[in-house]
Image 1 (cartoon, one colour):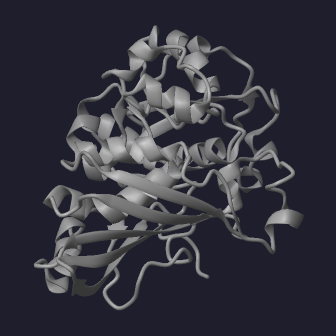
Image 2: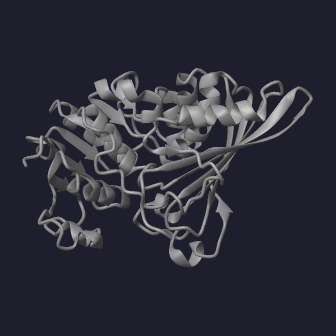
Length: 351
């Protein structure tokens, strides 16, 4: 049976790009037509992802954004921050639908972009409405109507899923303190002195404490959920994992809100979400979501004291799938009017 839509990937040789290609190759309704990359030009996709050995005859192509977009319905970009922004004017001029995995078009504030990404945005006029923030659990209807999606960051996705129930209910206020632990694949395919295996395998360390670029992204999304004027203090931690994120956020809510009400809120919020689980007999775990587009969310409540109740919100994702390529395809599915679960409903491996 012929597939109804076609897609291209730009930046297909990194971890995120490889996962985009793999998921698109098994998509029931979308044909992966071409994959562009500055690396491995003329070589098979298995040069970057050995799982694709013998799966496809596609080769990496060294082509322009306009050439990549020719004749396809949607282009997905797995490019680094700042590189994606430089490609975007040519791509948008073609009129093709776009899903961008970089951070270049997630923010509405050019000032925040300059501060957290280290340079002025080259196209600040595109930060006000061109791109829809692609978190389905927050913006499903807007994603369906969009032509350009800015797919959320991995930390942002994980932390937001842990906080959204409280934010939407109006129970989140004041300050949020978060620690997020992440695997090495979040640093990309090219090793550095601080990310390669001998340093990472038996180590824990923080990086960008209180200054991570996902902070303004999270705050903008929580404001869109109905809770502005928050402060977020976020400490990311590098862990000896290949993939996965585990986030713990501490918040204080009104002491009159009971633990039973808070637990019920989380269960109700995610009851109909296809990719967010609230485990009934345990708290979230990375191993339960690795290799899948599923997220797990949980909550524990402390006793009331001085009019406030401490709440710990836990969330876990696979940074490359729900925190990256899988979520981008979930948004693509919505944008194309398809079942958002298409090519994403496998539960991953165990253990």
